[in-house]
Structures are given as structure tokens and as C-alpha cells.
Image (cartoon, rainbow, N blue to C red; front, side, top):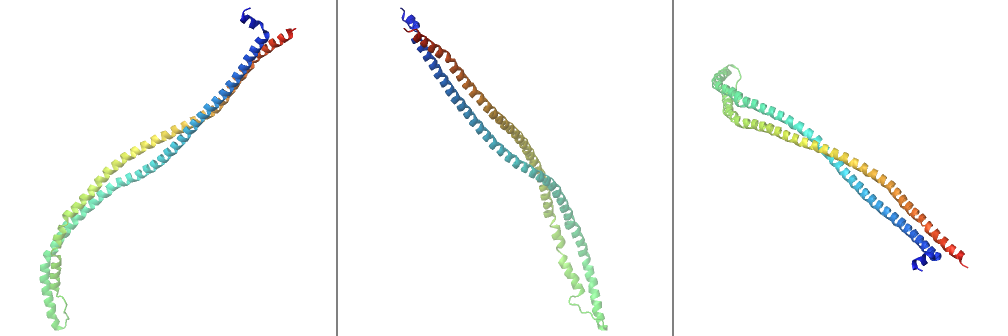
Length: 274
């Protein structure tokens, strides 16, 4: 008889083979269940740690961006004040230059011209003062007391001497005052340029604020998305674990067929024995 046919005809041996196949299938099902559960837990844990690290990084970035936005917002407010003050500075310096110009006209023209007129009249006044002084001294002999420490004409002469170089000194201030007015005008022009530069900086700062606001919105959306993924990951892990356990259970249940069939063959051989 053919060995294969003899093996098939031997119910006891064939039953043991089916039982071995069933036990091996049970072992495979248990192995699949164990490995599958371990893989799902390992993968879900790795994903959870990655998502947690991403969430932590986003939280740190969001804090940094918030701090930067607060700092730049404060800078923008300060620039508003500085730009307004700088704009007003140009008007103030222009007004100061006008005042200096007017003061220069008074100091270097009007006042010296007036002093020149006074100095021109002082010699005549001095001569009149000498006559008056002489008259008063003559009247002292008739009982009118007149004996000043400084005679009237000498006092006028002293005044003329004191005022003599004053018009020239005042006129000499024309160029310094004009230079001062030019300096104020230069300050005004510079303040205008500075104000324009500050306005450009302020525009760039405002643009940076807009970018930071958009970035904050993006990080907030990313944080929400990561939170949703983490929630979905929990559900996915439960579903995968359930699927792996169910697959292993189904495979294990299917091994009942070869085990039961092998057991029946073995029992039938025992029952047929004489």
C-alpha cells in the first residue's frame, strides 16, 4: 500500500496530525494577538509621545510669539508718541527760528540805531548840562545849595562813554543770532526726516504685528489639530486593539475544527479497535 494512503487510512495518526495543526493554529493566533497588541501599543505610544512633543513645542513657540507680539506692540505705541513729538518738534524749532530772527532784528538793528540816536544827542545834552550845572553853582552863592559829587555834565559824559561801544557790540551779534536761527531750522528739517524714518519703522513694526497675529492664529489652529489627533489616536488605539484581539480570537476559534476533527478521528480509531 502507498505510504500516503496508509497514513490517510490510519485514523489515529491522521487525528493526531489534525490536533497538532489545531494546537499550532492556536499558538499562531496567540502569537498574532500578543504581537499585534504589542505593536499597536508601541506605535500608539510613539505617536502619542511625538504629538505631545509637538504640542509642547507649539506651546513654547506660542509663548515666545505672544511675548514678541507684546514687546512689539509696546514698541509700536512708543513709536506713535515719538512720531507725534517729532512732528511737533519741527513746528517748535521753526517757531524758535522765527523768534531768533525777530530778536536778531531788534537786538542788532533797532536797539543799536536807537542807541546811536541817543549817543548823537548826548554831546548837546552834555553842553546843556554844563550850562545848567554852572548856573546852579552860581545860584549857590544866593543861598541855593548845590554841590553834587558828580557834576551833571560829567554824568552825561560818563553815560556817553558807557554807551559808546554798545551799538557796535550789539551789531556784532547779528551773525551769531543768524547762525542760531539756522541751527534751529536745521533741527526742524532733521526732525522732519527723523519723523519720516520713524513712520517707516512704525509701518514695518505694524506689519510685523500682523505677521505675529497670523502666526498666533496658525499655532492655535495647529494646537487644536494636535489635540484632536490625540483624541482620535485614543479611539484608534482602542479600535486596533479590538481588531487584533478579535482576529486572534477568530483564528483561535477556527482551530476548534481541526482539533475536534482530529479528536473524533482518534476516538473513532479507539472505538473500532477489537
